[in-house]
Image (tube, rainbow, N blue to C red):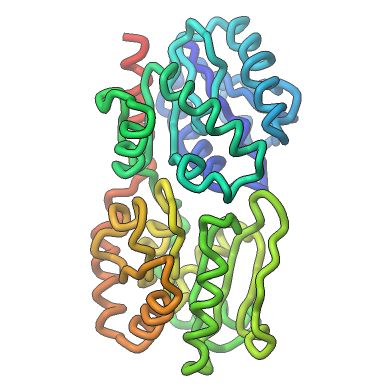
Length: 370
């Protein structure tokens, strides 16, 4: 069988959620099924780390997709021609976008429909592209994978997609996320530049991640707490963003940009709590990573977050700064609650396994060629 995969999200050291998702599944599929040929399509020169095995062919199809107009050229013209030439049996797109009007059956992973609910958070042309094309992708795909029941229900309601067409397959957790010793925690604090406990946020600095309210809540929390720091890990997704921070708190709020997984896993394990309050999310990968690292969680009560975190989080209203600040106070001062959330997370995290996810994706692909 010849299986094509859209791997344009594999960007070496710059990968975010889609890239990590693609890599975890692709490397498992290609190793588990050496009898099949996988053709991976990139939109720029292929980073050597993505050579995979002898049953994998990596192809660069230009131009790089840096703008929605280039999405159209790449998917609907250049990639479409490449797929037709390669005579694929099936095609999988981990980011949900693919050439329309093909005879090749398509499995599309649609992570969320945030652009349908909060299009104002996206650049104008990106929002236009997503709102124009994703209804067509949902209709044209032979089968859809999504990463939470919340997103499945959203796709069914928004696009009138038959529920039986959608497979809910949870993401997994990188094995580098694990509990660390107290000595390691002290070392991480020193590397971060302080000796105090800290709250942690991890994610792209996208408007829907709710960074502005997180900062406002921390500033409110800090009025009665003089020790806890706030560490924010992540890079701007669309453009540079500025945040208003009170001068007296500037030394307690640390923007760290993008950090490699090994170091980030240690930073997660050393945090007093992981604070994650986006108002819209498809899965929320850092929630599972916090559970694996035995770090208690404060989470927003919107979208899929209660589904993913279950009993392993203290929930707050992401639209209410006081609610977020109160959650910080409650968790910081309640050791019994911290222990309760960590223990619940140890059980809940077992539901998030990349080996299992890759097997389920393979089963979904097989449905399209049987």
